[in-house]
Length: 467
Image (cartoon, rainbow, N blue to C red; front, side):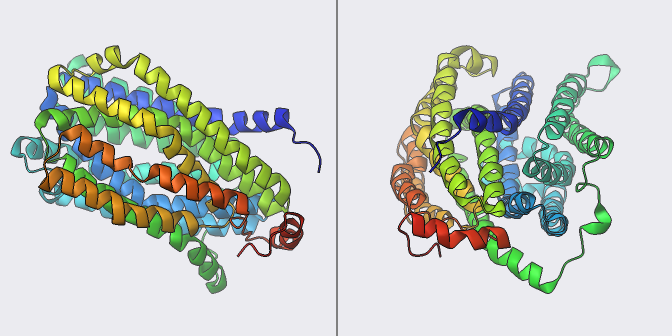
């Protein structure tokens, strides 16, 4: 076996991971600025908009299954240079994602009272949240459109285009917030409605920039609409058979997180405000992780699609450990800077202490949590969408949700104790996921090249089957 080329590997990770991480950092920075600006309206406004963000997260969970499934096909077909396969799989992925975006748009704009009533029982939060949702709901299809294009571009190793879209979107969102929230530059002072309108406009610019750059740089897939919908019954059967476990995983994860957020949204007003701010900092860590996750999906999936299975499994193991190391460094940086950052978010007194406690808990478990996440994304890109799904959903509904619900709604434990239970399954799942990593049973190609190479890999490692 030839020695592993670390230099080339790190270079390939950097090409994919750094632009994605920077893009997510930009987005998170924009969210932080949003929170800081809205914070000037008061902690109640921060908490209300934070609850609306949880509804957005539910939408994310509902369409992310299609993103994960799509990237499985994009990356493997990219490795095999199957252009027809890329076009077909993108068309199916886009159609499914956009259906989710339109449904959530209708819920937010037409039934905001129902949505807010689900997340909190406090009228002052509900009223502000309804004002925000009625406008921001129109951004949801735009968010879906940009994510669909970005996932295809990243899978085909064109990661800079989504980065430029995010840069324009974030910068415009900050400027529009300044104009519309407070009424600067002759604009009316719209408060949270202004923040919502700024989000809609900024997401529209994101879509426009990605589309224009894809066209001018000659990307062959994103705007080739006439090639996206040539589906066959056989292809759809393969697509949904592979994607179904991922879809179930993400939808169930969204429902489970919604149940957890129902508990967190019925705590004290200080805890709700602290949670809204915490989610922003959580986004920083996840943003850094997303770079490795995308690198894993592309670098592993591409080699599996091309039939280079030995190289794929070597890359997968190293990506997991590198991700965990970078997450640890990111968590330390956030903890060192927590005081000025939380203060800038207008948190004081009890809400400040709660937010700091949440950061401590999260940073302690983030290394293992993101290790689980990147392993699961690696398995999906390799064709195994079942193992991580079964583990995550089983532990979520058999362990995490019951404990969080009982501790918060029945036993009335302190808020930070309830919050800590949100991550109680992570160490157990990590041990099981890691054992699966070394079993090689997650390597399940969808291309002829990968399938032809599979028996030799399993024989070389003394395995009987990858099924």
